[in-house]
View: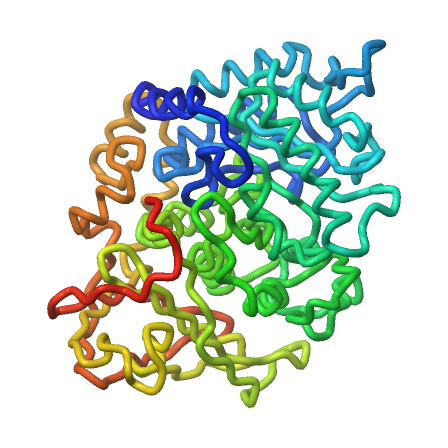
Length: 492
């Protein structure tokens, strides 16, 4: 299985270099793993290689998670010529050798720095060292840079200042003639959603996430999460806080450049299964990068069965490249543990004329939620003027075919030929063999979901949604295909 994936990766590495968003990368949101949220500074060569192996063993690589990203705490300062030096105690084989081994496993290798004099963990930063740092990463065959925002020496405060600071590294990366996905981690400061797409493949939109669905925290201080005047985004931001923050500009994501809602918390243990399902569903539909944050060496069956759902990942990787948008929000509902409660409806277009619909219950009790076709297709025309409202639609549940925990546990327990036989017997989707675009074109049932109902013209979708849960549906027209209202160049 290595060869097919690596051939596609190798083709990326010889793409011609062009500037900014057109570097040929992240045409759909990037997927992979990052160590920071589970392990922080506890990093090593063995961690990276063991994680890469586990991505293969669990089948996660084959559903699309192909970046292994090393976060902070890896360096040992600079050499006499001013180039960054890796910590030889943590990475005795050197970064180039680690990259080679990850590439040989059919995956890509990412690293981290900060657009400041120090990284957030107080290691050597890249501010005013951009050219040499980009050169050393290119010499190590790095494929991805997460670029943070700590210790920036006050070079922020309005958009042009932050843009200029981050653009220097964008130009340095491009000058190496090696494609490297460029992921800004500027926490949503200085209206990055208005300029990030000019220089980067993704940009963080909020303070750091933590493992809570809705708990308010003084470290994530914006009481109005959607306010553009939140100048100190902080950390300990809940899932609900982040989706409310991105809602007004979620449509800024586009092929090659995406709103980054931060790494996935699925599997850390601070949320219920329903909350993790909602978290993962929203990140997929809102086209955030999907970077697993849990320690995969201790992966549970329930976590695997959330992360490997191909019907939900197909929404993330949809070739149309359009995000779902929020079409309604109701805060006049029963409040939960922290005095927080609301319901939301999100909807967006998909490849082939389909539509994704999410009914989110962030209230303090199970709730029946609904959305009419007029609401679902409001982006195609308000007040029922969209032609799609006059059609009949089949509704598919995207979580109905979630892998059973018993099956997921067998995958985690088996190895060698027994594991290969089990994976073949399951017939789980493998995007290294058939792309999501092709699978959607073929109407592969593993991507389309399970049919649950039909909606008549002018009708509505209605269902009971558990507390802090989501229902996620794909709608497919039973009539003739209707051209979509286009707002961008068709690139995919």
